[in-house]
View 1 (cartoon, one colour):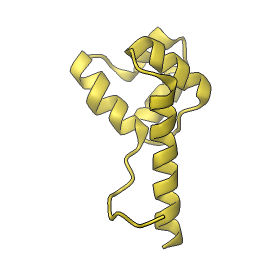
View 2 (cartoon, helix red, strand yellow):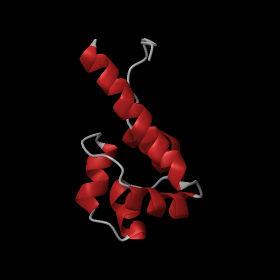
View 3 (cartoon, one colour):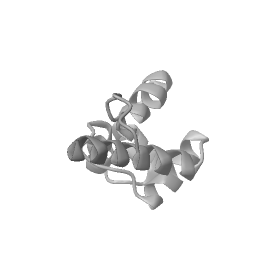
Amino acid sequence: MSNSGMRPIHPGEILEKEFLEPLGITADALARSLNEVAGDVRALVMQEGGISPELAKKLSLCLKTTPEFWLNLQSAYDQRRTEIERG
């Protein structure tokens, strides 16, 4: 895989910038909507946690996306981080 020079973009950054901010909701409010632990959703937004298949499904239903959208973001982030770590 080639090194594109782009920084890895965490799915939590996408969640925050493309969904939470435009919708005017907080991570805690989203967590309540998803029936998830608020700390887990905050960790995702703070780019300290990742997206599981279960969370991807919940996000897709709540935000009118697909589970694949979220899982692909996580996969791309993980792959890019691995490229950087390997040099």
